[in-house]
Amino acid sequence: MAAIDEWAGVWRRRWIAWPDGSRDDRTDVTWVQGPSLFVDLRQPAGRPDFDGVDSLDACTSEHLAWLARQEGFAGQFDFDGTHHHWRRIFDFQSASPPPDVGALHGHGDHAIEIGRDAPYVEYWARDGEDQAPAAALRFEDEQGRAGFLVRTGDLFAVAFDRPSVLPSDKPLAELSTTASAEDIRPLLDCDISIGEIRGGAWIITASSLPFREGEDLAPQRVRDRLAFGAAASETRWRIVAEEASPADFALFSSANAGTSV
Image 1 (cartoon, rainbow, N blue to C red):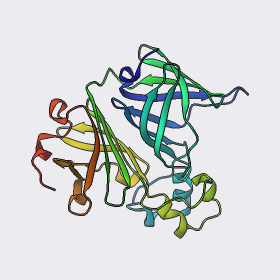
Image 2 (image 1 turned 30 degrees about the vertical axis):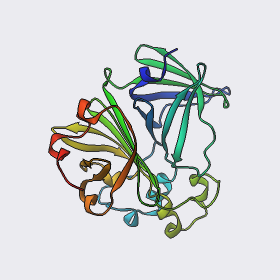
Image 3 (image 1 turned 120 degrees about the vertical axis):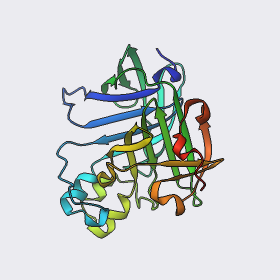
């Protein structure tokens, strides 16, 4: 059984199965693992057309219902010698997420995960070849809102917790069935995005906020401060944990390396 550092990379879930014989092979699940920090995005089938939608305010009830069914989380990956634990610092669906613990058994670029507290089996496949080296940052804004940036090779994931707090321990998907559109929109403002680095641009290819797809994340760092794209002048994040050296792995493109925030 592999230790934590051997799981660094981008993994796609092919299916999940339960003891009653049911299984899900339609949800689009991507797990991006750094040296220990990770980001995970899970998007259900049946995505509506988001063409022309440029914000949560522009989303129809159909859009909002689908967005509320997404899952995602970011945090710290641990291993106790028997089980792997995805410690969720924040969770798209829940203010108090349940423990996420399972035993991973690797077979080259494939892995089987068996749940410890829930009876499930998941089949994972590495996305492409080994994406090492890997590096990651954890950061916070002035209010303590958490964020994560994980890079493995030319693939990355970024996650920003929502500014507001979920009002109960009920899953967001359940809250959305009774909440008004005005009430649910702020709760959906939790950005978990996956992307590729192309010619120095950090292009978002999948996001819990689909209108962000195609944007350049454009991370900009000076010392312990971090900013992104057009929001660089508005939001400055303080780096609170760093894994590996951005200088060693060119975590940030040279075009952004000298940008002041």
